[in-house]
Every structure is written in structure tokens, then in C-alpha cells.
Length: 431
Image 1 (cartoon, one colour):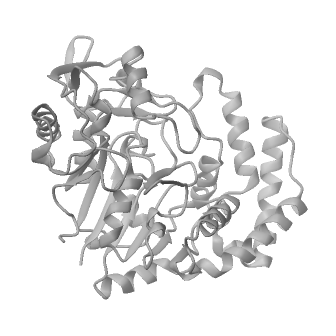
Image 2 (tube, rainbow, N blue to C red):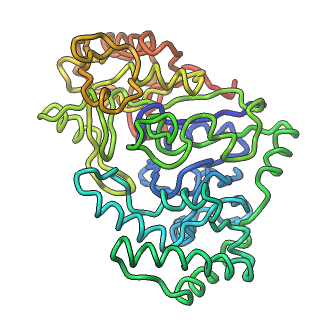
């Protein structure tokens, strides 16, 4: 038995969907434990491109149970649309393979409207939110006034909690955000319809996972976003509103930390981020645009162009430490195929002083200058390479140098978007 957590080791968008898809072959259960539909996993299965925002990537494998844990905030409309799309493609023929935690929180229409209105008021201080209501939903969760799935499917409780919520939210919308209020009926009727559809997926997923572990079955925990977007350990306030680090896998599912055996961080062979916030290795000229186009670096959820930069070993060392990574999967190595030289950030300087760790103070981090070492490129298409030894010598040297700098074993190298375009060096499930 092995239970494996897969997390992003940078600012998200590292290619977790593909890695989870590959590791699902060895798992009995795939569990999403945090975030909402602000995340997106893009997978290429054969000639088919599949984008998932809420449902775990394991849904593309028959016979695997997929679970959305209590740490997720769920937009019912988006969830139902994903199910409809999957079924239209001949997938998810059996509804019993998908379970929702009865304790997860529901994204309401007022969360989305507040999210958008607040961002509009922020001017040049925008966080870069997707406007999908994720942050306001987590605010209500922490403020102990959220609406959980178990509340939504109980008509009386839902009516009471919705009336209480609208009294506050409409005041905020009208008096502070200068936006229009909601009527009780428009939300109540719409969400009662959702409740009837969601009801069949509801379960005590923490207890379910306990029994699965007790019976020796493998569990794959699927995170969204990345380490530097963690609400506690990321580049606050330019973060998401959930615990994206490895600890979130336990709080977001009700599984004990003692039951986690491997923690695999996913990192691109370079770095990207979406939204505002410091990014020391960002490339603002033609090199960055070349990287963006070669890597198709546009958000699968928003379509926004991602900011691109050279690999940052300081970020990865941080991810290794705060997550306790036991391995790293390097994705998109092939994006660097056509570069004459490739840079790696090994540290920073701030006002002439060397810094080896990410500063806690955002203003200092924003002024850090990267210290680079340069390596020769390989100028070869590596997408059909089937083993590490078969990679060009300069590509092998680059990967080995990344491993050395971040102080963690590299267990996988992705050389293309398809499942088959992957070099596995060690399977965390031990198979």
C-alpha cells in the first residue's frame, strides 16, 4: 500500500494533471483536497484534449474512485457542467465512481459578484483573482458562516442559512461595492435544483478513505495551484485562499499525516506564474515570449498569458523544505529544446547582499535580483526520447544540475504533453 500526494512546487500550472493521470494507473482512489474551479488541469489523451477544473484527473481511468474532499470549495454549476461534458464524451458511465464530501463548502452567486467587484475597486493593487468566488467562499468558511454541501441538500437548513447570508452580502454589495443585490428566490430556486443533482454524490469521504487505507488500497492526493500560492506559505497576499502545500492534503480530506508515504512536487523546467506578485526570474523580452509560445503558456481556466522565466532553484529548495518532498517531477523539458543557452537562478541579491532563501517580506522579495549560472542548450527535439540515458548530453546535465541545486531526487521527466512522452525514473507507488 502507498498513499502519494502530488503538489505544485512553483506558482501553479506545473503540469500536475498529466502526472496525476499517469500515477492514477497505480491508485485505487484519486482525491482532490483544496481549491476550486480557479484551477485547471489540461490532459492530452490520445488525440483528445481534456480540461478539468474540479473533478480529479483520475476520472479518465475506468474503475478508479474519484473524491472531492472537504477542503475544496465547489461551484455546483461548474461541477454539473463537467459531469455533463464527460458523459457526452462517453466517460463516467457509472456515477458511483465520483464522491463529494458532505463537508465541502459551496460557492454562491454572491461570492462571485463580490470577488469581481472587489478586484475592480483595487486598481493597480489587484491580486489577479479569477473572479470565480473562491476567496469570498473561503472567507465565509473561516468566518463560520459558509454553506456546506450537507446544508445545501437539507432544504430547511439551506433556506435559513441563505436568508442570513443575504442580509449581510446584499448590504456589502449595495453600500460598499456599489453593486446590485440578490433576491432570495433567484438563488434559492436555482440552488435547490443543483441540490437534487448533487445529492447522489454526497458521502462521508473521510470515513470512506479511512476504510480504503485500512483495506490496503492506494490513494493519490491531487493538489491544485502551487506551493508559492499557499495562503500561509506563499507570496502573500498574491496567493490563493487555500492550503496548497502538502499539509492541505490531510486537512482537506480528513486523512492522518501518518498515512502519507510519498510527496511528489511538480516543477516545470522553467517557471511561470499568473496574476500579480514578485517573480525574480521573469523574462519580459523576446526570450520570455519565445518560452510562452513554445510552452503554450496560456491559462487552461482563464486563457490569460502566463508570465515566464528561467528555473528558480531558490523556489524549489523552499518547496522541498515546506512540503517535505520525497521526489520531484520535471515537466516541459521539451520547451527548452530550441534555446542556445539556458539559465538557472541559484540565489538572489538584495541591495548587494546575497540571499539563499525567499524573503518573508514581499517588498524585499520584489526587489531581489536573480543570480544565474548558464548552461548550454541541446538544440534537439526530445519529445520521442524514451529513457533518461537517451536524452542529449546537455539535457541530462541540465536535469542533474536541477536535482543538485534543489536537493531532492527527480523521479520523472516529461518531454511532451502526451502520456507516452514521459520518462519515469522512480515510481512513488513502488511498482
